[in-house]
Image (cartoon, rainbow, N blue to C red):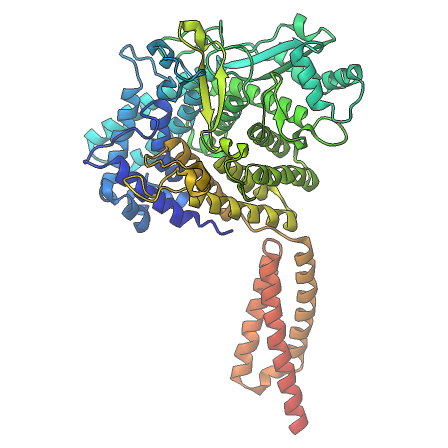
Length: 615
């Protein structure tokens, strides 16, 4: 792997600190302006590595690595860095909390009009959006984990008060974000004979079988998900009426809408999260927001969250309800994407939604849910390899690993990005809003690294790591080279000169996603190396021969030939024990050590025979 996450994360930290702390105070805002999502992305460029990569931890200043502190030198020394981060995090929480104490989760400057030129109303900019709920879950868990550890080394009472206040505010926002996600879950039930049903059948019917047969088999494949939606989803939005789902020709889809679902019920909780606003979003899932929500919810039951006890009792109950929805949505989309006995619908690029929209980017979103489901189901290497082929093809089709011609349509996914409407946003009196996504490159790299870490077959894993190197090379070309934002992202014309755009301001949206890739790369590198059954067998055979030859040297009395030979045999014995100890986890190392032992034993045997011949 050509990616060197330590050095590259240090470079990102250095550039982020320089840009964010220019006048001894934290400054929010980037290319898209300040909002609850962009500002969280900016903070996560520092907080994600600091809480997920051990060598970048800042919660114990005395144990922090010198180069890590040096990268944040603009913020101060090892004592000042965590204190100034606490100030910036507190500023963020105060900025996005209304006067009545209600946390703010608006999309604000990330919202765009669906029709260019329309003027967005102020009330519309304040609409809650799932992206803000999701990134708040990620950031608040990072903050609470940071404060719990940092508190143990704080001795100054005033600083301890600041830490306690930050943790309380973060906990409140975390609870509110979880409530928002529960109220944004959507189940869309429709007839198999209608337009939505026909699109879904077209997607899953890769073998072109009779529609009635496909509907029956699909309903059977979704039977358990259907039952749990009717019986287990009891709080928040998304509870499906059994009378609808039980009708034989009814199909459904589930996941997260773009914001609070219209008529979503209130969530009862012991924590005061302020006003639970009315929703306006249509009760239908959006693939982008479903993927964003799934990634955030996964952190709620991650090992770090459990070990540090980051959730209180009320949050644990909310997390259980979200985990249920996480399982249902993940299973649903994985079932749809891999339905049938022939070619998977996922392999039929590009993915087409039930409302007729099709993009390669949507295939990438669905592939992530398929992989999540495969992890839970302990899928085989063969199944994982099929997903790997999809990722490779997506890299080609999006012109990341294949040369692009002059200004072709495939480049639109990179700039200006994919633009999709937010149905229901027009109910407040303004134009229909839209959301734009342009993160196919970093998302593809992240999915590639995650999948590579799951494969236990060397050839397929190697191909994915080669692909990750090509993707990283592409992202390196998109770094901003000049101006205050140098060293950060995104300058798409660096990889595609034909786009003819010159962007100089940082996109925290894009930079944060590149940081996610580097954090994922660090995790992959920290994992034990792939264990080859073939190498383990070779190591065992070599050790058998080496043990035998070693015992023969001891038996034939080489130790009588002098102190030097006795020392050499002792060293050989130590190396043999080392090879046996690592054979299970690192068979390649065992092979290398044993081969060196065999060479030494051969030299000893040759020397002994020569001595016998001369005597």
